[in-house]
Amino acid sequence: MRDFRHGVWQPTGLEHRLAELLAQSAAGTGSLSAAGIRAVLWEGSTAAMHENGGRFITLLADLLPLIEKPDATALHTAGGALDLVETITQTAPHRQAAPPPEATPCPSEAGSDQSHVPPSPRSPHTREDSRRLRVDAARNHARLLNAAARIARERGLSNLTMEAVATTAGVGKGTVFRRFGDRAGLLQALLQRSEDTFQAAHLSGLEHADSRDKAIERLHAFGVAAIRRNAKEMELQMAAEPSPEQRYRRTPRRTYQERVSILLRLAAPEADAELVSHALLGYLEPALLWHLSDQCNVPLQRLENGWHELVSRLTRTHSAT
Image (tube, rainbow, N blue to C red; front, side):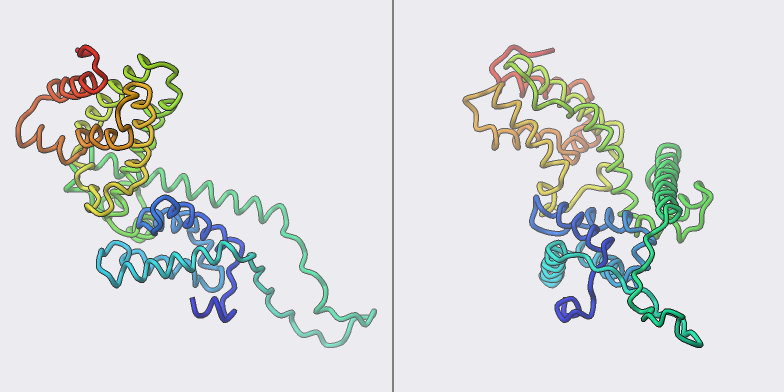
């Protein structure tokens, strides 16, 4: 922050864009998250290492382990980092200076000052190379996640290590560490891919229910889908379970709460939708579903029936089962 304020470090266009991504990820909670930082580290990839000597991307990498610590010092550091990020987003990006031209034995024939010649525009080939690098990075990211998913499915999550992913994907171990940071980052990436698939299948359009009956129907269907998803990937859900102070601030949880609240306003207009939606989602918490299914041996059908009964009682309708 001191270097930035004194003009020693002037963020480039790429660093400015990465700061904007971080600020957007922190907009809902008012704080930086490990998931948000990992997403930016992946987005910046190796390109950001060439911006200002890698100053900003290195700062984020060093910040990541601190963000995951709930102590006061870490929170203070995270707050300062967010201040820096937000300040960068409000500052015009700086074009890095070109390297000094090589000395020439004599002045040009026209006698002009070559130092004032504007830099040539970036060639189409350079832009195409940049796009190709981004495509390659996305392809490699998917390849690593596919390898991780295969290990988890065939050998169990206990055998999911960075070394195992590297071997299965046919890459060096360093590649996996650079992409995900650590095993926790790998688990979060796996869970995020599952989350994206689930939301696309079961959350899209939930807010567009146009009648009370339709809203009730969608509430029933959403809960059953969530219970079945948890049963299918319970080990991953539990391994990536956030700490209590972060659980209700995560983006997926906030998205669920927002959609369920919208449905409740139609399905049960007399209810306090904002609070009751939290109560409904409490039934779908991975820790509770794990306790009921694994520790209490409650069958899947009974868990689904319990959700139907909860929604039916709340909306004062007959059970859907």
